Image 1 (tube, rainbow, N blue to C red):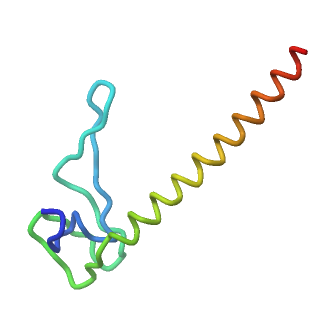
Image 2 (spheres, one colour):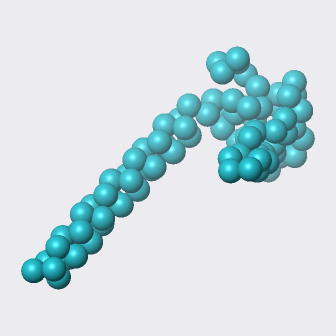
Length: 86
């Protein structure tokens, strides 16, 4: 479940992935970057657990900001290329 307290839903959890052909798949392991806890097990929950909702929202905002900047740069490049044709 997405709302339960587990390592997968913790702010400090980094999921591990494997590459299969052209995509990546999550594997049943990861690691904690809190510093005090190096263990990970699907049923293990430590006292440092924090909800990852804020981190996920910050990540979405950062990605959105980067994409908007990239769109502006692409428009600028397109304008330069159009002016060079003229």
